[in-house]
Image (cartoon, rainbow, N blue to C red; front, side, top):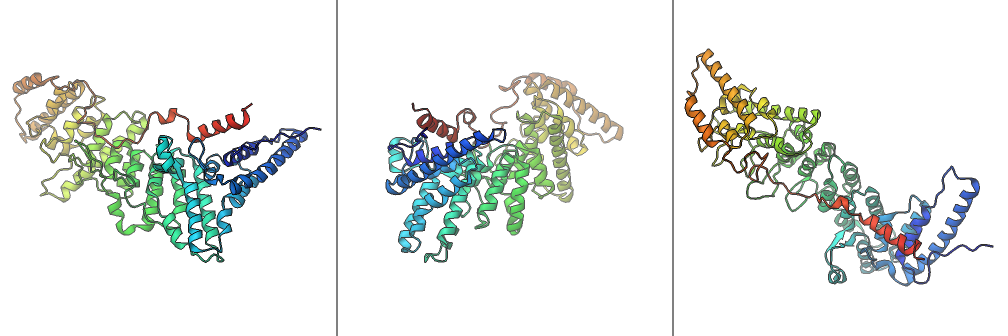
Length: 517
């Protein structure tokens, strides 16, 4: 007669019970297995479940391991949220209802203060994860703790986030039971108030990878309290639209806008044109549209065409309108090389050109032009496009506009330099040749129409261009520090190379429980 092995010895902890349950729940039960194999696995799982059930109560309730933290700074409840039970409903129900919620259930009829203590303990054990970067002294003091939900969003772990929120919802429903004398509405409103760091972490995944996380958060949290989404979410003053734009997530932006439109219609325009507070020596104070023009043509088109973002007169700290950021995007080494990306960016630039023309037509006496910097340099968009060493694509689009040619082609900045001067100064030969050809065409057009135009001494111009050629310290470089606008950088290039907390935790308990012999 064979004896089943024991998974938990006398030195086992509450964490070990959770990890063992996870491993047992993962026992294979494939349809391809024969009946004997399935019966054997089911019998083994039932045996281990009884052992875990018996010892878990002792570990959690008698020894007080419920608040202990393992080598990764996790409580047993957090370990459960991180690993899960591989879809095993029996294990899920056992730990949620009979282990984690038992302390609260035991004090349902107790005093208000006793119940509050148990709820605070539950929240601490579920939410507060000690950062692995903290030193031991900080761990002992319980300082510098991170919300476990934020960690789940940072790792894009929707399953973990679902387990955390499910546990919290179960606790709320239990504590709000009619037999309980302590009303839970005050806790519901405070605890489930929109958590800005949580949503900010969820949104910081590129190319709509954030969609499922954000969708889940909005459904689970906003039904209790809808405040927060319309406000800045991080220390840089970025709201949800800024983050969607910077991470090129148009699908997520539509989701966010649908939520905002249904709840904040009275201040929707202010939210769409909200400015961030990020600032450096050269730029800052940007709207979501300005951010989108630098990172996501899809989001920029969405903001202008569907939501009516101001694309004309709003300016950043650098005195740039959205038009300038769209031109600068051509300098950035992002996803703008495919035919589809190029087409979207070209469409965006044409749309911004059209908006500029409409603005000038509607405001014939205005002294401000969306295509000119309102600062000491007074450079225009052709100055910027002229030093794009990557291609002449932007110049080709801009110079098809008669309005832009007439306004900017030979228009000098505050230092008397035209776009052609800047192209030569940066050694952008192709761009310079394109501008020279445009100037010649404009001369011929003026002569045919007898409009005269500006007389340009070719010999003098050639001497000026030869004198300034290649003199820039950034000559031949695609962008410079002053040109390439800074944005908050949330991306850690080492993050994707390092194992996640779930991977490290799983490996730790595999070594401890399965391979210790």
